[in-house]
Length: 230
Image (cartoon, rainbow, N blue to C red; front, side, top):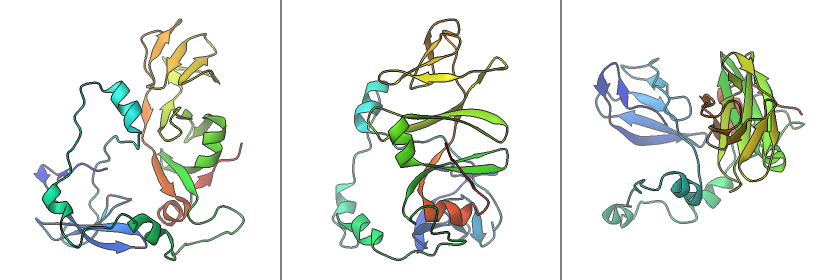
């Protein structure tokens, strides 16, 4: 998800094409082409410009509703859904059968459509296999010299990542029941990154942007990516 304001100017985007199953967007103001996954202009007057990343996540409605009791839900446009060229209900299944172009392919790593959690920090990128995260519920690691925690919610879908340094001190975390974690100071943290009890009660962990993506797509746009090994 990207901010649509660039250099003080609001841009309006529309789907213009698909490149290796990754959307190409076109802004109406200049006609520039933008890559979905990178937020960078590939062609046109704004070529080379970069959109600013916005915080976002893929989350189950139940968890979102629990954390946002007064949140609003976008209502589908019934007139738009009536259009004949709108995607059919089996669109994703059909797309999944199409071949993909995978650069620097290594069959000993993952299948092209393996889901990974991609993280970029201080110019370094790393891919974390989603199946391994679901199995362990939590991964502690260091990327770009930054200690991080990546965790999946009890819904088995929502993934969040945080820096694990608070007040200049690196914390170690231990998995507990539900969406709760305890660090080595005895502080208990919830899945939202807030300390709810213990010595650090009231503190918050710094959120880190992530991208849940197919391995082939992540690798194509992050050719020097590291791969997490426990």
